[in-house]
Image 1 (cartoon, rainbow, N blue to C red):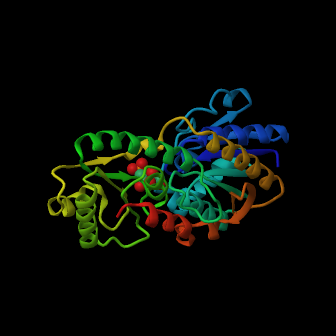
Image 2: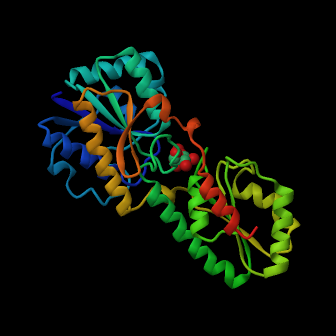
Image 3: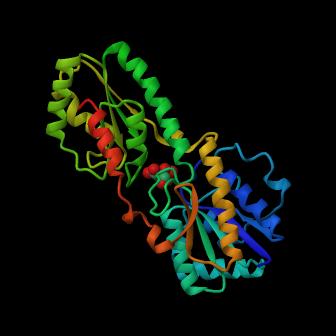
Length: 325
Ligand code: F6P
């Protein structure tokens, strides 16, 4: 293997730059050249490639976002689009590819390799949602939960001052990991996740009882993908039926996707970046590099997809015992 390409795809996440840096430096360490692909699969189709050397990835370890940009490409979902991408990679002399992204990015790589087995892909789980099976953490998740936690702490200050009820929406289209961890750490009174059906009448009753007993601020953390329909929808269904004089809604949104990656995310980026390069050099393909119990592991793409994951029963228990309602 003489030349590899690396790109970021789907929802960006903090730590992607640290990971690009790790891939580039691990490749150079192994005398392999690296091309960066700009704007995900869309850039692959256009041949938007940039050579990356040691200096090219200097000073990016602490930067959020991704220097390569990201995209979700409809054209890559067609055989014609993938054919164009294949021709661009071949013309550039690429022998293997590292894709940093989520579930959809790995599915794209899997279909590509079925049609064009000449070019192997190895994946690195890059998403704030933590919704891939086979890794304890995805890249960017730790930063995102700390961003969410900081926001919840600040909301608590103002919620306490006015004795208000707050509905705080965090990201997580299909998974409640961000809600569960940031909610536990922020002392949320209730945490609503897509994995557990939300019983609105019960929630209304519990908020009422909680108010009666404690006369205290109340924070409900809700994942955007919860069946209640997000924080605004939930507030509509609940706020007039509970004894709180006032309630407010805060949607944290894309602030959870940005910012300086935490130490944990940078170390994860380093482990996974090196793992991916080593896997390509060992002629592996179609696998995601994960980390389980601090050890780097390889998980086939078809197993890594999110329908395999379950929310941690142990954290669910913690949330149940420690949430007030
Ligand atoms: O997959 C990561 C994620 O941040 C989800 O939590 C969220 O639902 C989605 O991306 C938002 O995507 P977009 O940036 O395209 O609005």
